Image 1 (tube, helix red, strand yellow):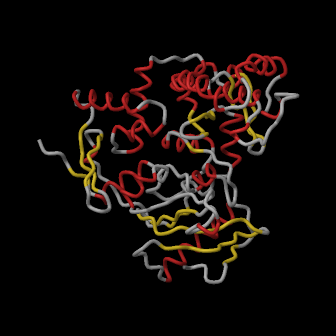
Image 2 (tube, rainbow, N blue to C red):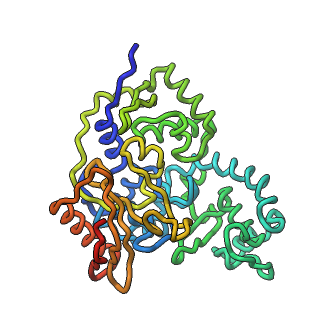
Image 3 (cartoon, helix red, strand yellow):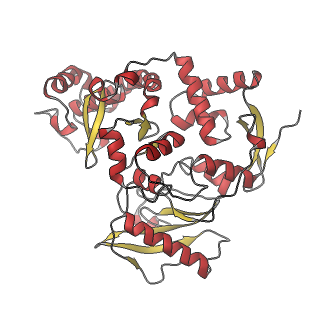
Length: 395
């Protein structure tokens, strides 16, 4: 039996629709609408870089331009509709997923106990009980509130004092949770004081969680290899995802498809049986500024295969060796990545330093104006009172 081929244009449309980037970025961007968007994405990555807007806020704004950061804080701190934990990095996750995170808590605890004793300064395990008692007796705290008398070191992630490491261990193993952030500083409390009882007390067998992870990843990716399913949440092993795919294929739950890349090469993947019959529609031809950590771009290799877009963060690249800039933002139009832009808040304005169009993208008058209009919207979102362009910004 021949394997159906998902052509590149259709693959892009399927993928972008799953990621909320096919329709217009309209809607209230708060409350139930915001929660539904996070549910659809699965999680939203958090990041501290704030040259213009933090990654999580820009991810949400790209899809709902009426979104404002306070709306996300309400979901997390006030309504407890989402919680903060780890996927590939710190992320905001729908509260309904919490019970499935228990497998992650257990596995992370084992990994940290084995590795962190060697990697971290001092024996953090000797501080675990003391940190737990401190929170139980005195309430929520930050990493700055624990470890009195301990050498603070450099403060970098590689040089935490033992009590800070113990606090991070307690969070990663699920014993404490983030109750809020002050600025970008995590504030922790006992998990039973943070997570609503219906989710706190729910339990799943590991096999149920593996099924949930694989099925949920396939829902959001549209098509994927077993490795991509495992990597989506960074929650289960490649072997577990491979075994799930083999079983689901033999049971007829999923099918094989060949997905065409932008270069015409085919990649064998898995999909739900109805994928080839979907009536996909091309995304609206809207210019959008995306976060470098946007869910549609998080898997850099996938972005290159589908869109021909090569992107790397250059924060840690010496300035003289950077090809673009410290922190540049991808720019999408419809189903195409058309370039990247170097911009930041500066003296109350959105300072646009440079825009580099992708090869083959012609920046005619209409497209430049569409980009400028989006930058004007972005300036409002970022609290800037004007957009200022560096001479020769269009490269």
